[in-house]
Image (cartoon, rainbow, N blue to C red; front, side):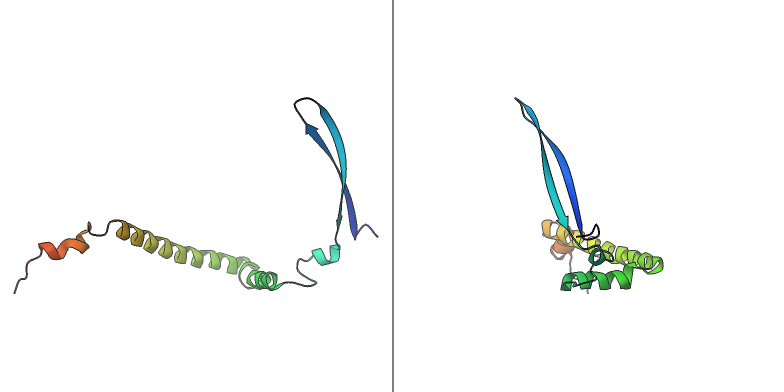
Length: 110
């Protein structure tokens, strides 16, 4: 195997116990092909990864589309957060707000 296909990392882990200290060396072998790692998802992308790659290429690859995506996302998030907060507030205070009890205090005028 060449250096592009296999890396061997040796980590020295120090285990500290209350009574003694000892060192252990664990070889951890990570095998991967660099050509499939760079660029990501090039060999056999799954459905989720191909979807992520498509979203990246469509929305986040260029700075201009990234900025527009952030601005539009902020507007939609603000609307969702505001309406969600209002709905939760109204649900928690049902029967206490003026729009819920105003029919009790209004008189019919002709």
